[in-house]
Image 1 (tube, each protein chain N blue to C red):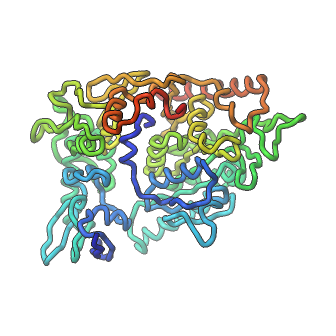
Image 2: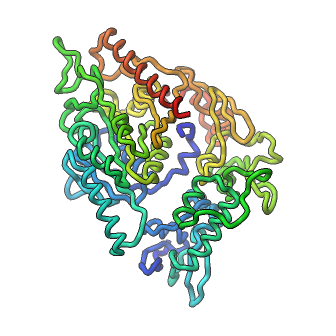
Image 3: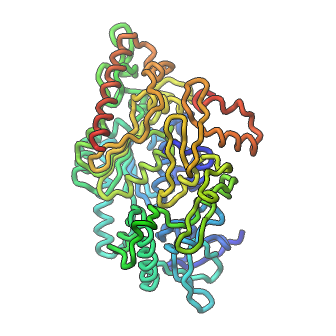
Length: 309
Length: 242
């Protein structure tokens, strides 16, 4: 879907359910991702959102950027809340209190809310098979509280709680592979997406909402503030992450893998790491470690995609 | 711009005079299925017949396609009556008869509780894959892109979109807007390396002078340069390296 450009973009839905005027940093690709997601979902949507950047920037009392019913949750329970919403609405429709209607139930959270704190409720909601979509906006650290490391922070990244210095090379553990954890729940739909590929993202979110049962979409959201890059480069780094296979774009429909974007030429990870302030301390040896890991993971995904064919 | 009030399913809603009923319904969260209508394409709508509703006006009732029916003061719309459901069932079954393999139509059918079509299934010689001949692609090509490379060919049962005489069109710019707009994903567009294939023509792509990635068909660059007066050198580099 990334092949579409110029003229096709005029055909994208013009209504905005996540409006402008919110307080995201300059160049925030996460806010862009939310905007595209809301374009894909449309107005018949209920959103439960965990605490995190997107909640902070979009709902400073008494203002709101949302045009849909929106519930703010604690870090851990957005998946639990949305499964309650889904069950409640289903019961009300059955009893005839509200008319039968297709409503999208969507839980959203950052990587901290998803991979660290909300993991239990998320796992429960996926396992119970509610007709819901969970969307993780992964900016690879707790950005709104001041760039603390999360379990989604990649190996080698410098954050305020995994600082790089004489005795440390930044984050020394590997990034938690959330999409694979979601796949392991045997849910109908899992996908990875990135706002640098908007058509692909919109298509995947639409698919996730249409599929009956639980769906999980993992969106890599470049954070210029936390990644220490220029705001105007946010989209570019999203593309670099995908072209260097650090974050491959794929979808898993009922257990069958499909690569949705194949880089024209696989870039070395240095292209992606270079220019990011959080990686600038890395030595060649550490970059080689990252490259090996990326190659290994990408081969795994490729192999799974081939098996599915 | 005159603000008026119309009634949809017993609910009074605000609308702008002459706005399409489907748009008003969607703004107010009332579900009406539609395939061939696109809000950004002015001439679209009216051919798939899936969005039929009852329009009560001046003491009369008519079945109309909500996508191109104008909202007027005193109009009352009913979207979920037995008549609408019965007629729509026939429409969807006929669509299913034309394109038995389309996921979109199948889903629409399931939603209305239709399991299979009563009619002849179009398989074998007349097999058209997924196209429902709604002509949205041709309207997009004309209105949004402005090249009119494709149009509806033939008449009646054999009507389908295509380039003149099914020959590779010199007017086509390979932008793929038709493939994007198609409600049933019937238009095939494949990218292989620096070649894009669509409507039986191969397009060579412009490669970025920095990263070497092919990113836009040459014909599309020609068209943009011709219509906007943008300098050609602007397209030497891909959006990442400008």
